[in-house]
Image (cartoon, rainbow, N blue to C red; front, side, top):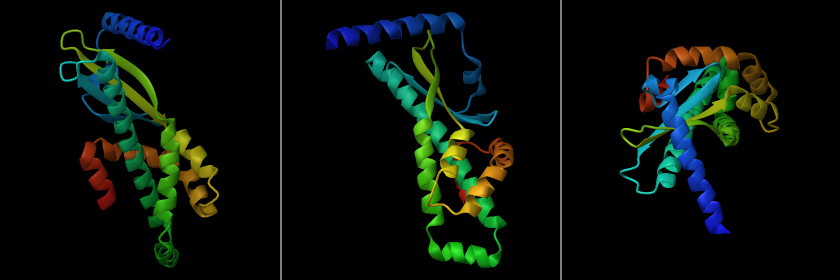
Length: 192
């Protein structure tokens, strides 16, 4: 039974290789970035070379995991950006209360983590010349909005702020993101 499943996976990957090669390099790979934003969706790109990893299945899974990790990083950076905008919208008195409680960041990021379960594999491509596996993963902004809206432990004020401002904040974050990359983005958001 296990051999049959393994054989089906191998056949599926072989078919994927032929289909991928026939279509040429995908547009998402031409962006030369590990993460990007478009149409209120967070994308991550992962790549691995089959030479380093002898198993083609493992090479593809590694590229897919890397893509999901990149999508998750940019999603979390956006969440911190949005949370920072929320705290800046508070009065000094409200901000002092939130800081004294010290749970806002932890609670909010816990729900961000729950939304990350929605990261999905979007596409894969294998470079026929180099044997490099490439993968694209995505997570939609709506997943965060649904998670925050259903959170019982977050204040109604924060939930309302996210509902009203998440899409505009996405556009501001996208502009901000275009000037930064990878770890620079995460550091810049935290320092902002």
